[in-house]
Image 1 (cartoon, helix red, strand yellow):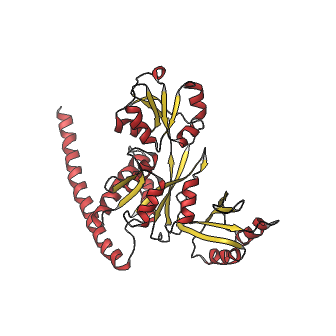
Image 2 (cartoon, rainbow, N blue to C red):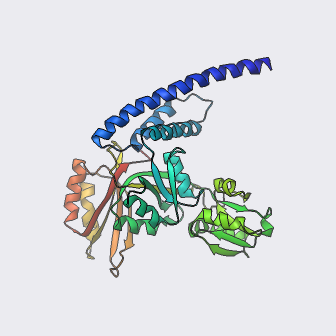
Image 3 (tube, one colour):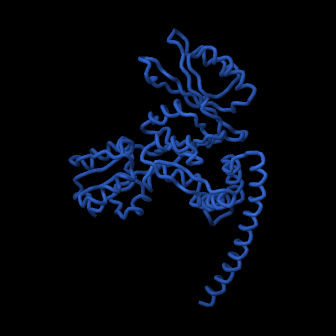
Length: 356
């Protein structure tokens, strides 16, 4: 016990230093906030935070894991930002959805969250400046693009401000205590699509009821003694459900990509990605021709996807992600060459590449 007492005193001394250093860091952040206010710069700058996280990872000698240390620093960022300004973030609710978890991963627990009933509500809150930022899913490695988000990006005046790739693990949550007692499965359509084989094999006779979100599924399952939901471990803890089975997803490496949306434009980072959407006339070789300027300037295309255009029968819009910033000289030249060939063109934003 004497040994433990001595070690605890050392920990107390370190904690005392940490408190002082964290407050000193926050004081410096206040000075930066004053400068940002004069220049109109946003409080949340993902590129700067990513830069710090990379540096912290390089400095880490253990025993803390890199992910644990990144988690600590994300909360430091969140607490520091709250000293500068309270940030309000809209995302799909209720609490415990993967959108909510992604938002917390980006903005930390010191931010304020508006948990919305739908993706369209997230966009509306950002458009009306009720919230500073929104977090919305854009695509999943198993099920592909989120059509509603793509449509709203075309219609809305918001900018893509950042991105996050979140590892997604689905679990069977239930008050039943035994999977054999489950008769009804509540689930959002996306998690169900990602776990279709598992559900067919393990719950072949259950009645499936679709919900607006994975957390709403957990809420409904909580009220049904023979119910279950597909959701996150965090949702199980929030709603008091047992985890009857883990990692239900049909394919390993399941990830969902999320966009941060804002009325502001993201500051240039040096490792940026740009997203655009456009339409072209239906003619032989039209798409090949419009993409040639990218090849000429050796600009890497990381994504190209087509989608039927609303209110225009059998016309398509193309979503493209590519490396570089809208203000780069090569990007400006490329877009100037392609715009003349489009019937519709919109820049969705330039933002830090989360995988750079």
